[in-house]
Length: 483
Image 1 (tube, rainbow, N blue to C red):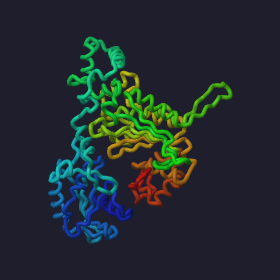
Image 2: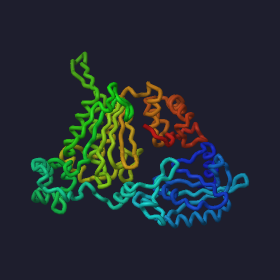
Image 3: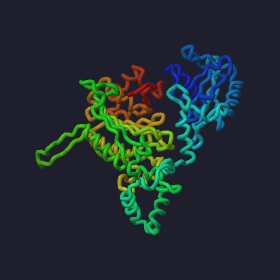
Image 4: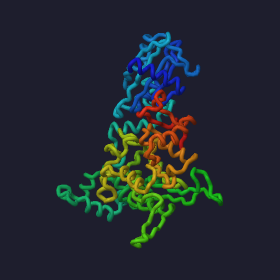
């Protein structure tokens, strides 16, 4: 960071009077902060890293107080960096301003294969942190496991189901799978059926794997009761709202069976609990069904949840959730995004696959193409239906996709539209992205009438507050609970 950039960063902090996802401030007027391990850890554990700025006092309304001694401060910070595992290598910058000295420490984000970064003095489980808004929060055991699972390439979908025998599998389903698998694979077809099942990781250590139980089991939930889908339709826009007779659910179903069976039954549940309009073309007389949510998009979202959810023992007790509200459809699966993929790159790059054996098997069974086309298909189908783009959320241990109804578009205003826009801006969005989301062609109109009111309410922050009219400006919802 050059001197001018540090100067601009200090002005930005004074202007917004807040810490952010990648900016932490420390006073350091009377000495080096005794412990910054949590911030060193959390910044190292996010892709963009972060910057710690010393010399600003949050308790004095973000006043510029300067640091006690720039050289000694850097020395002590370096000592703390050496106590991190892996060691954190920060880049320092020093600025003299109005007779005071300020120091910044840029913390680079570690490659995901090296995470989590943690304070060695407390160990991996207690010394690992994650940045949530402007706060450093201890990582959960599952979050730590997720990094280890990616680094060591754990394949939980092919762990041996030791309490399950071959008799628990449906022979006809296995036969169908083997027939389809052998097509155009002459070398594989030369092997015995049992050997093929071993090669395809459907049998391990002499017993079925989790993948084979989920694909061919007579009743998979006998051994794994929570590897299912819970589907509900609620009478309102928030969980807990009740209908005219006090009912909490319009419909409530536990969906069980194999993955293909759960996919079909989940689609039936969504179709049953959403509206379908039948239109007769006045010219051709052709009957056209228009669905509240495009069936192809819904199918892809449920399929993604079934194939890409986390099947480790850490999430074995968590079902996939389908929630139909009056204004939206949400699908939530255990396990956040896997590997190096991030929300803003979904559908644009080839992601790492958490459950490759399941993905290939579902391709063999002709339930999916397995060509990373799911997200683009969802977006395309929603656009064809004139609906807003899907809203993806990568939570701490879960991933969700939300479809909003067609009528919740730029033509309506009020709190419901604000919530939708805030959810979309969970990550930094450009002016063009926001205008496209709102289905507004004119950028200035979209920003002036829809974004700036939320900025004035302190609900949305600018990435470059010192340059509010910049063509490179991006916008993000401030840290809060967005429904």
